[in-house]
Amino acid sequence: MKKYALIAPMIVPMIFSAAPAFAEKPYVGVDYFIASYDQINADLNSQGVRIKTGSEITPYFAIEVFIASTVENTLNRTNGQEIDASLESIVGASVRLQYPVVQDRVGLYTTLGVSRAVIVAKSELLLDEEISAAESGTSLGFGVDVAVSKQWLVNLDYTSYVNRGAVELNAASIGIKYRLD
Image (cartoon, rainbow, N blue to C red; front, side):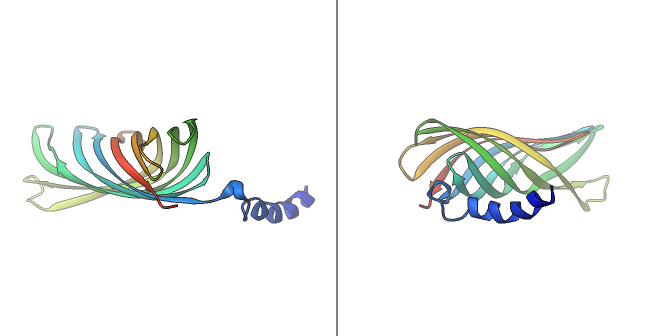
């Protein structure tokens, strides 16, 4: 067993080194999303923009980071009390497992990662002071990429950013992605 523990650190870098099968393909993208944040006695529906960047390590595997912010939020009622709340930001990183269905034209993918969301609320009950809360968790999503040219893709996806007990943050998005290669 010790033999394998010594060999593994040497083999893994060789696998991911300059092999043509592992040529990186960086990309950037922007998405419009509709998010739903649910907590006990509170619901928040938001619309916003997500900016992402990543790199396809292989045709089946990519790494991605993103940041998102909302541009419009709904007014909530919690136990009859009006609260002005907004989803300030979502940041995260994920691995992306993808499968090309139609070679270089259509691909299905799933994402698994971590994310952090910041929610800011203001209420008469709080004497118009703002309070903020941050929620972190494992994110899980799925989607489809459709190539409209060699460099440009349109993507649709659904992601559960946080799903811990009484707190859920989910979003559906549509966007564009540009391959930098």
